Length: 640
View 1 (cartoon, rainbow, N blue to C red):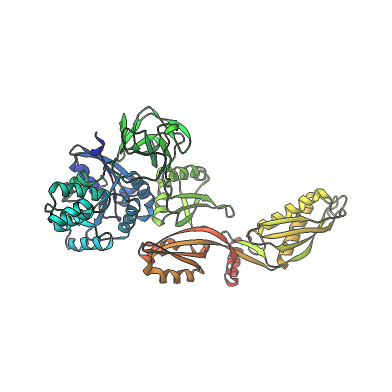
View 2 (view 1 turned 120 degrees about the vertical axis):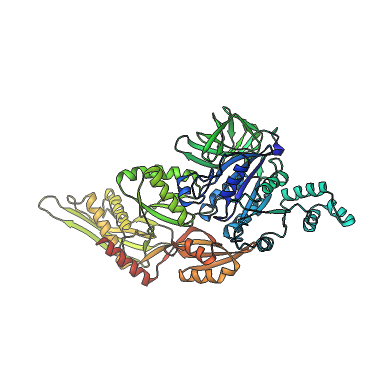
């Protein structure tokens, strides 16, 4: 198939705007499916997973293909909820064009704005499809004005007449056409068509098409616009890459693994977008990222859940290759080691919310790691970790819905049941003064006794220094072989804490004196003596509770700045700085981790879904006395 006839597009927009219904209408109109599927019946080609059918909403990006007037079209149907934004990011990296779907009954929503921002960043050619125009009470002209005022002044409605607005916009995008238009006051049909196509490909003009996916109104106009105005794989925007990349079927093979799927029957499926050259089934490629040759057998084109085997693919195709041994999401693929091209890796949003998981049974505990690993393999925005101090299993994602879906998959796909909870905070304890005490352990029980005697001085260390043990024993006050025993006892006591059972940190312990018994002294006696001394010294050195502080970067529209600042203050947060990014404000703050567990949903509520944030650990700080007393009391109650 001639490359210039190929089109691949991603459908973007807010949740429930009608992307999946539009995808279904296109497939049906092009004869790719004999019956138009329904979301309410769970019969669409692209929403085929059980959780998507159950929720009646897209969760994963799905892939379909069809032909319109002999032009092959591949479509990526993406989810609209921010909780699954990783699917949008990976999908957009594989697409040459986009269709932004807007619900005529709702107008421009949060998901619309997020999708538009991504399109602007990637400079993708795009069409706008205003959907559900057949609904009662819709004001299409009002939506069109909203598009122009909110998204782009270059958006223009396509119709059968050469509107003056369209002609002027096309002329303004090309100096030659502009000169002719100014001198003659008109453009020929050919000039208008060619000029419009180039302007759309360069994202200088964004055509608007109105219709309804349910009633099929506007579908022919949309398909015609896809064929006439959107970019072929050879005309797509340039990509940042290391190496020579030519968008040509004759150039050396270059591909990019933009997503991975775990299929219960086939196993791992690596989804690859081919940016140049050709690839044959039963051959090999060079993985430029992993620096190794990868051999494979079959190549598939995906039609929803169906995998259609193909013998050869080329530039522009989106394909699935099963059972690759070392290839991962984000890898760049080349024809050979001599013709390597490295494409930029995908950047995904950081998780915004976390849950702790506790398996129902020992059997579930054995299966959970493997199950979570397979779920995380498909979704780079889903993270799994083990909290070292609390030993809790933690899952993190982009929102409550995201984590609910992942836990649902644990149960449905892997038959693993878990209890969800709020993660425990990894508090620590430290001291604020120095103290020197004796720790003496002496026991007699008729036979050989136990004897260990040490003097230890504890002093606070700088935050983050951890622990230092210094031996200043001279003159054999304690035999050399018992010195490690003292340190072992001190470390054991530090791990158990004094105030509330949290680990002690940032302490220097100096062993400077003691005594021993020729017969009764032992390793265990000096361990116990060391632990006793450490606990007694800490009690005299004014111990305090420390809490983890996270560095938060919040991106919000300017109108929410006051509310966000007030909310941070209520969370004991400190604003450390502000910056501007486009139309948004970036707020940087330090906030106690314990105040951040509900921040994802709270931020979404405050900003109407327009805010986002990322966190990373910064440091530990002393817990205010009143709050510390409550934490200590709660810990003692739980231990009773």
